Image (cartoon, rainbow, N blue to C red; front, side, top):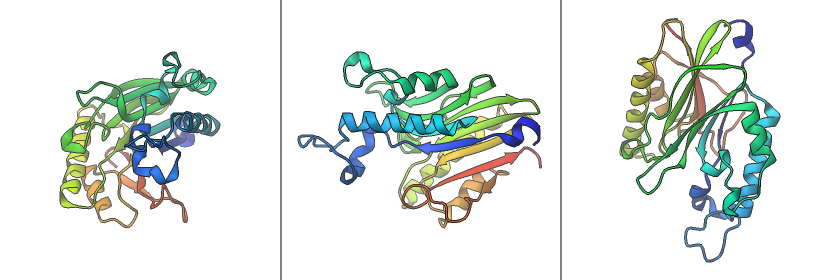
Length: 246
């Protein structure tokens, strides 16, 4: 790719949704009476502020997000839980926001995935959810995509979060999710389109399931992380990219 596409910057980040912070209780403050040990709302609000400022500071062309809480992308200050946020306002001024929030039937706007595209760039097409169901590991395990029209190429940018777990059932759910993504995007793909898939695949660089991911999303090519770069505690995030029919 040349021109604008050659200088494209894409950022991927699993934000750790507030609703799932009980799994990381040893690393944050929480109310002693909270049986789920969720992160204290004040600490979560500050973490959101820091994350938004980091995204704005990086100023990537496209941002792929996983475990996105509704309040990360929306003003909930009217409920008195979080204060108004200048960083949230700036995020919406700078980016077009395409979210895929989960809905388990208990209420919409549960954590999900999202794609942010810098304003001024045309979003030619998008699909909101591939996954977000029990068969793929739960409503937060979704894929969200936006097709951006660059001067010399249409580029599909996909944010995906597959389920965790090392057993056969979890592996089967990951494969089903990836196959669903492949089917969904293939129906919209033009022969000249390019594709980038980034997110949290919940497996490490050494995990043989990465080969399964490549098979499911063929002919994508995995982009190796530079040097000793790590993501989270065990490097369980990866990025794949392709140019169609090459």
